[in-house]
Amino acid sequence: MKIQMLTSSLVCVLAMTLPCLGQSDDKPARQTADLILVNGRVVTVDENIGEVQAIAIAGDRILDVGTGASLAKYIGETTRVIDLKGKLAIPGFIEGHGHFVGLGESKMNLDLMAVRNWDEVIAMVAQAVSNSKPGEWIIGRGWHQEKWDKVPEDNFEGFPTHHGISAISPDNPVSLTHASGHASFANKKAMDLAEISASTTDPDGGEILRDDSGQPIGIFRERASGLISRAQTSSTSPTQQTARIRLAIELATKECLSKGITSFQDAGSSFDVIDIFKQLAESGVLDLRLWVMIREPNEKLKARINDYSSIKRIGNNYLTVGGIKRSIDGALGSRGAWLLEPYTDSKESTGLATATIESVSETALIALENDLQFCVHAIGDRANREVLNIFQAAFSSNPSKTDRRWRIEHAQHLNAMDIPRFAELGVIASMQAIHCTSDAPWVIARLGHKRAEEGAYVWQKLMQSGAVVTNGTDTPVEDVSPIASYYATVSRRLKDDSVFYPKQRMSRMEALRSYTINTAYAAFEEDIKGTLTPGKLADIVVLSHDILSIEESQIPQTKVQMTIVGGKIAYQAN
Image 1 (cartoon, rainbow, N blue to C red):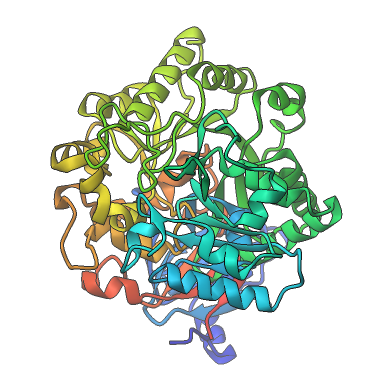
Image 2 (tube, rainbow, N blue to C red; image 1 turned 180 degrees about the vertical axis):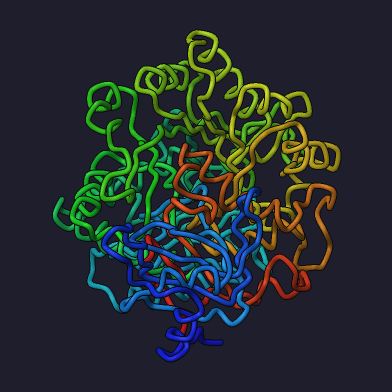
């Protein structure tokens, strides 16, 4: 349903219900709103205000909230008044953990998220080859062997081998990233360009999967994927790379705005990418607010961190560099999550440590010295314990500041002993609810019932212990849609209609807070974002359905009607 603007006559009627806007010379002029939203269910998420029916906006800030009648005093000749016709208006969604450029790039490459099997992947690659020149890279992302309807005929331990795709792409290197981002596939041409053979050693924190004869099958786990990505990058010029990143930013922005996202917490970008963000923000053409984690090796951090730690709320609050990102393990689906005990379905493996404790501890000190948040990817229970230990040691070495708000990104599988430590240390559990329902079909196979119930996606256990839990999608691992992740948060319902450990579900309002004020708090931005409070940024989303009250099964059908960033309509549905 399209949102309608009030007619000029109705604006006049509203204005006439209150004293004339004109002021005598001895009285200050009343501030005029640029935009007023009326006749909605406006859930401010501000516990001191609650629910109202209208919002007045002046410039990029919320001027006032209340009823249509109470805000009519702000109507001037140029005020635009929009009738929400009962629709739900809430604070703009804040994506709590995603990969911004990666999202944009996913729109430029083969999208393998919906493939049903490896045969479909081969067909898509064959089509791409037919439309490409010899030597051009074929890039894709989104395949996940656990989601297919059949195991590939040519496989090793359930993973596809390179032979089928190598046969149809002898002259085109092919690189296909796993949905998790923690593994990748390469054909023979790509491996040749990367100079990978049976004699290539595994890099630290990575693994080249090999068949029984020792030959690489084309699957690269964790940091081994860098062998392929570096070969790909070396084939393009710096100018081409910059142009590609700028296009990715444009595509990612468009996608986020269409889904009600007004701020995006970017989980790891290089200095070079941050430079591009900064140029766009300072030029006033960055249309989505970004809070960015730096992802660079320690040596580069120490050499250049001073140039980036001061990037705070530039471009009128469109860009902040707020943290440093590291990863200490991989993903559960590829058995890269670092566990305290072996995988239930792979007794010889406890996953992978993708970085040493010493290296991550060194990064923690760099974060302390530069007053940045430290944000560490940890999925397995061993990984989470080690990160909590690193955080605790860092805090103890510098106890003068207690409100650090360091974050564990994902915190998916916890040992019961470590759950209370998040609140005790003030550590944010930066989680992605959609991973719960997406991963659930194989979580029990990987961990067994006991470990899964004890510590898999335990939102309520964390919150009840006093921890702050945030939400997001880890896009492009998952669709960036907050509605889909919100539904996963409140339902934990799987495709077969079962519910994955229902006691850990959030209430509707808890889920909304996890996508708004909690996420703002996790970035030290609760003073300007996360609630519809007068004085805060006018970042608002209007939805087609009331996700706080409709039947649970209807939540996924909810659409974004309007996205407002800084008081300006950035997206409106047809």
